[in-house]
Image (cartoon, each protein chain N blue to C red):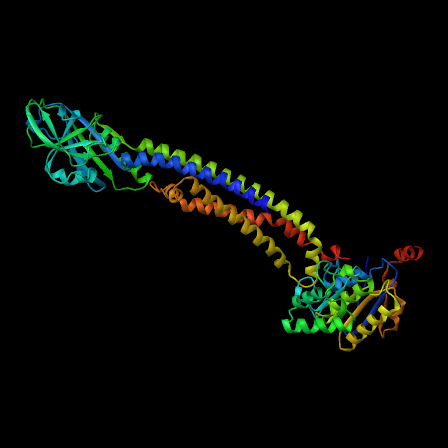
Length: 202
Length: 358
């Protein structure tokens, strides 16, 4: 899937762009320690994310399919994420409230994910990743299928997070995200030639 | 969860019942051993001649050699029979003054020199005085209760015990020397060795007419029973452990598969795998311990005596059956079942989160 890739990222926003199936999501999961690399190594501040679960605590991950806890309310989703990251009860309350407001979710705090629109769910997933106060934020197609208004809210939030010193890595096809000041990595460069041709033909 | 609990209860009941049955059957044989005297050996040697001629007892050398190995008492069984009030015929055994203290080790009711009637008939209270006649002489004999097995080693009926100084009429001089010996060894190996030593001494002293009675046959029976039952117990415990592992592991795996998404999600949020495994570990441990406790309590209740289970399990007469060992064996079953039943969950938790969450 992903071959001969090497990069160092420290702060700012990095966009991973490329055709579907070129390995953008795989790279995000490798960075988060959700997959084991068959070769090579990934280090977060010198630690292997596979071995140190604490690495995961410093990573906020927004899945393509969001993966919000279906039976918990949006507020509970956020609080749980913050609690598991080791925040104190006061911090949990404050950060949850902060991100509910910043992402325009305060009126939906008591609702379950299924009761929200796609855009609201997307924002809730990003809020859940942000309440952990992670050092690295990984987002897999965070704006796919969203209208411009929701996309703008998300872009604004990500930019604010990056400005505060966080590292954002986004796997996307969405050209609207080019509005972000970013580093761009074209993944099509990393595909083997045969696979590249197949993907282009597709 | 209820199904797992029911299965565990059923299996533990089966295993514990078998253990109780084994302990009970061992106890029955052990009781016989206890009644016969675990380390008791009775050596009988028939002598023909006139006692009044001062013939030295043939078993005398044996007495000296046994002095360091336990308690003994020297008796003579006369060929005459006594007539005892209410009881009829009784064997007559005489004892020497110097053996009185040793006799108390075998028959605690004997506390001073005199005539005693050893009987196993429970309806006669200890200390009751009964009239005993031998020829033209008559004595009041005090009843001393003893076990049937101990009595049978001295003769088939009740026994009239008299001091040897009391001259008996019409005695023809034929008697049997009887040595009651109680080994100080408390383990079967020591008792076996003691019996072997007595046989060897008898052979060396060329006493070929002596008859030797001991609890060796019972002891052998008990040991054979224990060995066989230990094998069965191990087999049954292993089967119980395997069945528990199969049931608990498969249900845990099915449950894990249902919750794999949630587990992966929690792991992605930073929850360590060990915490997720701990949840299954605690659940299994509580279920198994609860089932084990319920079965122990139920069996105790069924035996109608709150102390029945401990009393059966703690009968440690021969030092071969140990309730502590039995309990430890069940703890091993619990531990091994617990650990192995978690292996499928452990394998599931090792699956990469990225393959579950998209």
